[in-house]
Length: 156
Image (tube, rainbow, N blue to C red; front, side, top):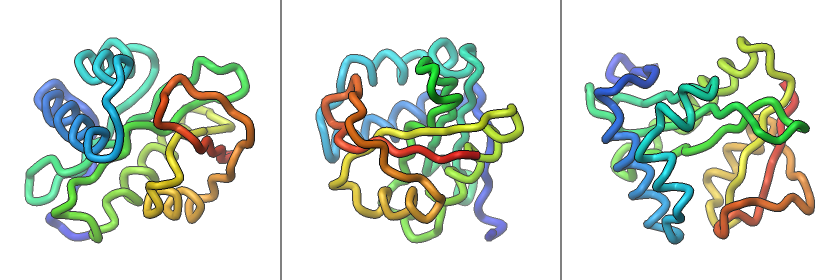
């Protein structure tokens, strides 16, 4: 990993970056939904305080990517990998991979056995990354998000 790249855990100084980057990527491909706004406005309440974690990718000390570990409310899964986004200008630096690995490692460290994610098949680079990381499609899974048409699971 380049010395210009750092993966750090969430603190309040990154709150606006987390929100801005996620609003950008969701809006780039889909419609931002009410549940997105709720979580992005109060990540401490909906992620951190609910036994989750947020990781941020810094490139030359600028926040350029995010990924969250969310404690699952679904009894079939332990955790969810969510809010993975990397700014266009730094794509190709493997930041999505580094962020995803940080979330997966955190889930393992917390004793998780399973981690799932919700995505859309039009996001081919992301789907490709998830497959590389060992996620497999779960058929017939219903999501609360309109944009989701693909749900994937990884056993830890």
